Length: 84
Image 1: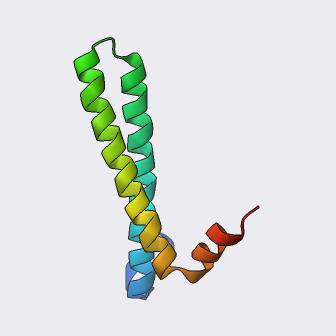
Image 2 (image 1 turned 180 degrees about the vertical axis):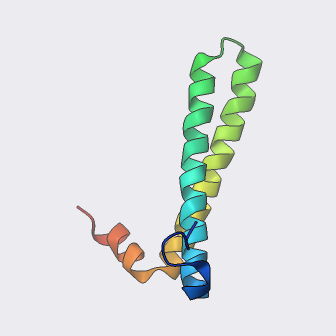
């Protein structure tokens, strides 16, 4: 979370919210990886089905966060449009 370097009290609310969303995105992507590892490791199809559902919900969460970032960070949005 933001504030580790400069102190939360010194940061704009916008900066804090951007950091919250970025950190949440990191956590959602980690969760996707963890679910995928568990899916690969499990031999039980009913367990796999549940884990796949959970993984896909995390993907939805990640997409929601990316959409928010694009709407609230013009430079980040530009990078999505222009990257090569």
